[in-house]
Image 1: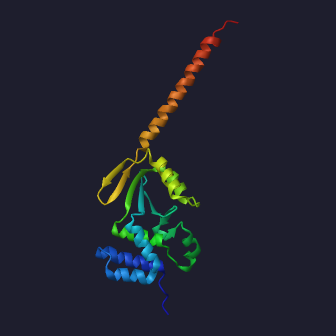
Image 2: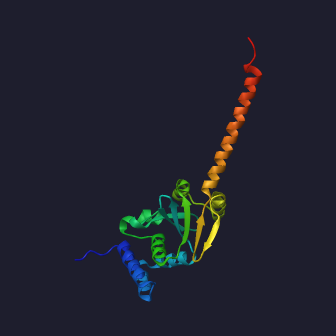
Length: 202
């Protein structure tokens, strides 16, 4: 008896067919619905709401996929069908694929995602945020992102997606200049103290 294909394998096969044909046909939609049920509807909802994000970090060219949820962002690793959501942790050993992975796979093959480009210096900061298991309210998440991207992401509109080129280098240059000014201040203080006390005759 032939072994039944896993959901991950079925998803990959359908996405490959979509890539070859260049569109999501009624046949593809029917196969997705038959395999994933309610999850495919949630995946299409995420696509329609532009909640799939692709981050490319330079110069390493590391790629990170994020699916934005209602209360937090979910880290997706498509090569190993991994997601940081609770559904993945409770169901992955049963061959279950969460809707975040489905949404990412469909977004990648159809090009329906927002693209962000960042320097590697920001990689650890963002990964730490994405891996944080605690739930965040939408207001708190929006405020945190506003602070985080204030200096790093001047927005550039490039057609279908949003491509953000950050200003990390300028930010760190400002930090270095500030540190140099602090060091110069202390040097002046030490020079002043030397003139006052260092030249006293015994």
